[in-house]
Amino acid sequence: MTTELGLPDGIRACLFDLDGVITKTAAVHAAAWKRTFDAFLRERDGDAYRPFEDADYERYVDGRPRADGVRTFLASRDIRLPEGDPDDPPDRQTVRGLGNRKNALLLELIHTHGVEAYDGTIRYIESVRAAGLRTAVVSSSANCREVLRSIHAEQLFDVTIDGVVASRRRLPGKPRPDTFLAAARDLGVEARAAAVFEDALAGMEAGRAGRFGYVVGVDRVGQADALRAHGADIVVRDLAELGEHP
Ligand SMILES: O=P(O)(O)OC[C@H]1O[C@@H](O)[C@H](O)[C@@H](O)[C@@H]1O
Image (cartoon, rainbow, N blue to C red):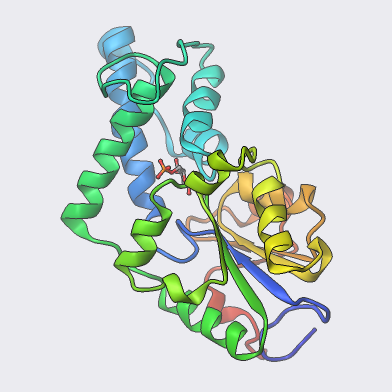
């Protein structure tokens, strides 16, 4: 282990997820999804509908690109909707319509409440860069750049692979490893020389599938065992814990 950063020797780049790792926006996404799916399920099944639970978010939606989240959750309830069109109105019962409904709610929540960063992560990224390692943000979110801009953190990353870049480059989203692998490649390092920092189960699986050198699970919601089961090499509650001496 290197002492300062708590990373194995040979790690030359760090790949950070955004929502829940850098910013306190995972809960905001979860809230927007819950409002979207509960409204949809109530419209469909009436008042006896089965609500969208935290576990549904963690298993089927967290970390995945927007439309994949819609499809994966609906499939878990044996529901299939037409794909629809990327600019379907938010009240249209299609995969894209539901995604747009969620995005409108997310943006409303973000604009009303603002975005907060995790100070422990920002300090950690600054130490990583001071130590000469390269950094990337790897997020499924199409809102990644706006969120980073709002906390003035864009300059902390040499490479950005977000939801917009991934669809332009046709990269399959997490849990597939392609977005992380693209970030490592853009930084000029092999996967085994890169560490992945993620809070989502889909992100853990991507880290494991890509054979990255180190997979750090960031547990903000009490799912340490699940993070380990899905591929974490280590689980911390905050990145400030990495490199702390016992
Ligand atoms: O809808 P967006 O902003 O493009 O984000 C896509 C996904 O981005 C991930 O970072 C979140 O964990 C998911 O909850 C979200 O659905």
